[in-house]
Length: 330
Ligand SMILES: Nc1ncnc2c1ncn2[C@@H]1O[C@H](COP(=O)(O)OP(=O)(O)OP(=O)(O)O)[C@@H](O)[C@H]1O
Image 1 (cartoon, rainbow, N blue to C red):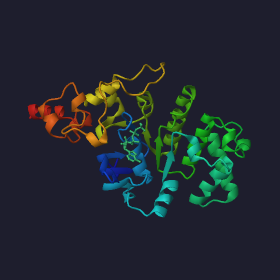
Image 2 (cartoon, helix red, strand yellow):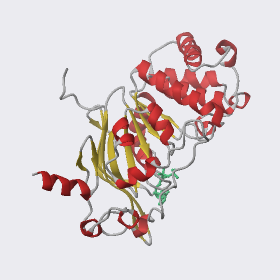
Image 3 (cartoon, protein in one colour):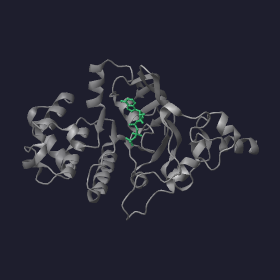
């Protein structure tokens, strides 16, 4: 096995800013993570932590005036954060597929789903119209749409919400991308079908060897679906590691708090708001560790110096507790 293989996606020291007349808002600061081919990375954290912005930066769809102010994003070793718009559009269809919360934002209401699938396939792959249509039918079958041969000629409004999201997954996979960025893909759907859609996304991505970045509020979804998870807090990564380790032996007190908020599997899933206090606004990030005002384990250093990600057992955590331990062991 080649252990030096370049990861499929590399996010290095990513910084995203929103300049405004009142000053510059630093929305993402020094984000670092990789995703390997075939791997599913979950990105979790409270509302406003920066999960969606991270996805938007990767797919090149930051809402202006938001911009990548520093750092690099590499796909298969090629820098994609500084590509001209047209180049990035090609990358987005062919190499990166996107799935958003509301399937209607990804579908054109005026065209049949077949036309949208066929156009996407033909834009990115050298196949005839007949081949593209066959491929589109197969994709609809793969995503569990019954009577795909007939439904291919239906319009988006003729599908239920869950079926529409299956179509969006088919569309995202149409050009066989290497990476799927899925931002809260089931939040807008009925609870009863959320698990089916997530299971489908996981199965198809594993079968097709696509890597996935899955943004969600839902720790239950992370636990069932992901290989690794990044926990975000106030525009930074607080902890990252294998999903089992992050869930069962979290190294960051913030992650510990989040884990306390996982509802049992058969309960309705709740949003992650169980930790006392609120995440600071990006305009008022405290000195030191951004989490220290809410942290039951904070000590002096946490109030003074900002921790970077450091080895913390089986995960990496931005928490001085682990620096202390390292010193004591040394
Ligand atoms: N267009 C924008 N203009 C200015 N600031 C923005 C803009 N979009 C996002 N931000 C800032 O970035 C922060 C992070 O936003 P982001 O959408 O990534 O959060 P999130 O973790 O995905 O939250 P949610 O789970 O609610 O979607 C926001 O709280 C906001 O302060």
